[in-house]
Each structure stands twice: as C-alpha cells, then as structure tokens.
Image (cartoon, rainbow, N blue to C red; front, side):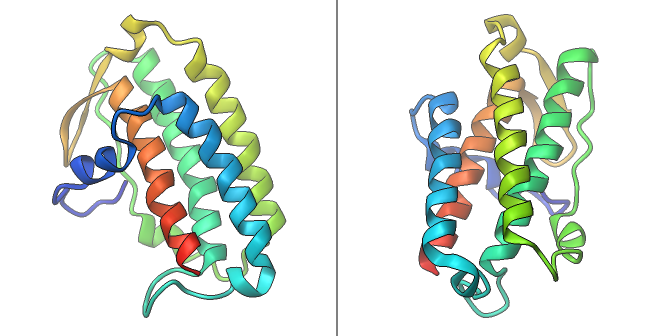
Length: 163
C-alpha cells in the first residue's frame, strides 16, 4: 500500500491474517476499530503509538483512505483484464491528516467497509482468481488483495491498541 519496495510486506500482512476467513475478519476488524477508538476517545487518539509514528486519529484517516483505495482497486481488477495496479504513497496522503475529525474518519471507514463487504460477499471463485500486476509485488489475485486488506486492518489495530 505504499510506493516503497515491498520488503516482505505481503507476507507480513498476510501472516497477521493467517488462515482466518478474510470476509469474517474484515467485518470483525471494523467493529474492533470502532470499539478501540471509542475506548481511547479524542485524547487517546491524539497520541502517537511511537516516536515519529502516526496518531490514532491519523490511523483512522488512513483506514478510511485504504477502504477508498482498495475498493477502487478491487473494482478495477473486476472490470479490466490485465489490470496494472496503481499503488499510492500513504505518506503523501497522510500529510493531509493534521486535523482529522474522529467521527468523520470512523463514519467514512464504516460506510466504505460495509459497501466493500457487500461487493466482496458476492464475488465468485472465478472473480477471486482474477489477477492484476502490482508494480512492487508482482502478480496478485483479487482474493489476495482482499486478504491483504484484512491483514492491513490487523496491523493498524495493533497500533491503535498500543495507545
């Protein structure tokens, strides 16, 4: 999800998901994100989980943006043969996260997640086998893209829980 070289990203993120069902994880993860965010409140979400790292609010904004980006990516893979995935530089996107409104970020994340899950639940095995090329990670099946999204949640949930 960044424009830097992969460096084992796919394996690390997929490892967080393990053999769990990605659709079940995506649904559970969004509920967990909201629960953790509500527990932390504005003050807790204003903290960073480490020196030079994002705040909780910035993580929430990033999760909402990831739903936009991955949702679009999935739709492109479904509609275009031989699709070449366009990565995005999450650091550049994050430069706009200075004044994140928690309710706006959470609401966007929840709505987009539900919209994406509605699409994902209707995909056939053939759809999940559709392949696109990620410029840093090489060929990726649509099913892998969805699994990566679920693992991506878990990565950022761990960061939120450190707060």
